[in-house]
Length: 72
Image (cartoon, rainbow, N blue to C red; front, side, top):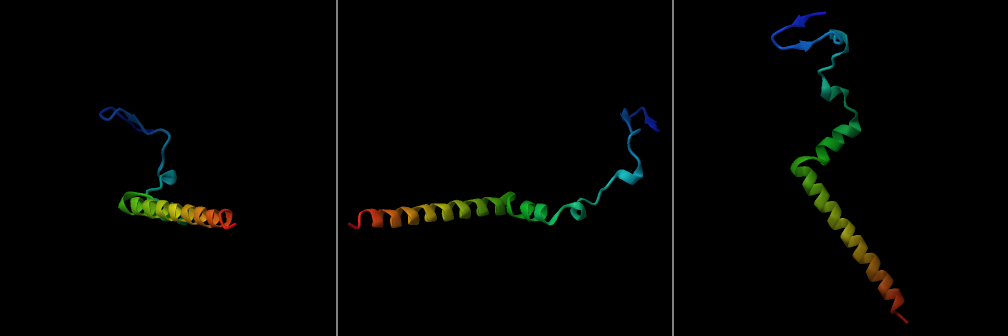
């Protein structure tokens, strides 16, 4: 145990074996894809494109349903 009076921080629970500073290598592939596609400017673009795609699908479903309902 090492007590540092200047920083007033206790390091009694840490040792060099359980500290992992290599964050990129420890992340799963899914988290790396999420970080790349869902954050920042790319994340905004993906969300806008997804919302536009959902609106187009809803419009097409409404168009086909309306066509079949009012066909007779």
